[in-house]
Length: 365
Image 1 (spheres, one colour):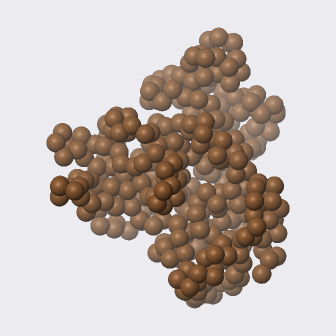
Image 2: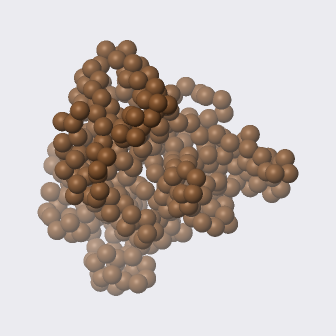
Image 3: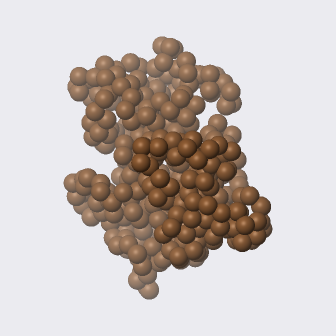
C-alpha cells in the first residue's frame, strides 16, 4: 500500500464521493450525521468522525474507517479500496492549503481562498434527485458524480443566505464571486439561480469558480456564480453590495499527465467526455470566444505535446464562432503545440452513441 492508510483519506470527503446523504447542518461538529447506506435508515443513524476518520451506525452497528467504508460499499478488499482512493486522489486531489497563488486581479480573492470557500459551500449542499438523474443520464457514474462535486443550488433565497452566513463565520467572503452583503443588514448573502452547480477546476483540482446549469433555461443554459457590484435594481440601488464579478475560468478534467489534450466548450461536456473516453484529458472553455485563461491552463500541463479542438458543427459553421475558433487555434499554435481541428458528431443522440463517439471522435475530420 506504499505507506498509505485510511488517515490519508478524509472520511467526509469519501462519504461525499460515495454519494452518502449527509446532514449538512451537522458539518463542523465532532460527529457528522448521515443516512446509513447499509441499513437504509430513514434517519441519521450513521455518524462520521472527521478527526479519527471512523464511522459507526447506531442502528445496524456497521462501523470502520474511511477505507473500509469505501471497500464495503464497492464490495472490494481494503487493499483495493486504498489503491482506488489513492488513484482518485491523484486525479481529483483532496483539498490542500498548499496551492500556488495567482496574481491579484481587481478585488478578486486569491485562488486558495476561493477554493476553500467554494469547497465548503459545496459541502453545505446536496444534489437533488432530478439533477442526479440528469447527470446519470449523460453517462456519468455515481462515483464520478461524487468526485466532480456537482451540487444543487437552493431555490429559496433565505436558505442561500443562511449558508452564506455560516460560511462567513469561517471565511473571509470578500472578493469571492457569488457572495455579497445585504444593503440594509450588512449580512452576507449568496447569489445564483436554481440549477446544478458545476465546479471549474485547475489541473491540481482546486476550484476557481462555479457555473450554474440553470433549471430555467429560457435564456442561457449556463451562468457563472457571480455577484457583479455594477449590477443595479430597477430603482437604481446596488444589487450586489461588496460583491465580485466572476471570470471566464477554464476547467481541466481527466488525466493531467496525458500528452494529448482535447479542448471543448462546457465543463459538463468535458467531464462526461473524459469519463466515457477512459479519463482522457479535457480542457473546457466556457465559450469559444472566452479564452482569457486558456494559455495559463495549458502551461499548467507540462506534458502536453498535442491538442485536439472539439467543437459542435453548428459552431464551426457559424461565421462568428468560426472566427473565434480560428483565433483560438492560432493562439495555441503560437505555443509550438500541434493543433488538430475536429467536430462533435451532429447526430449524437443518447449515452451509448456518445460512448462510441467519444472513443472515435479524433478519427473524424
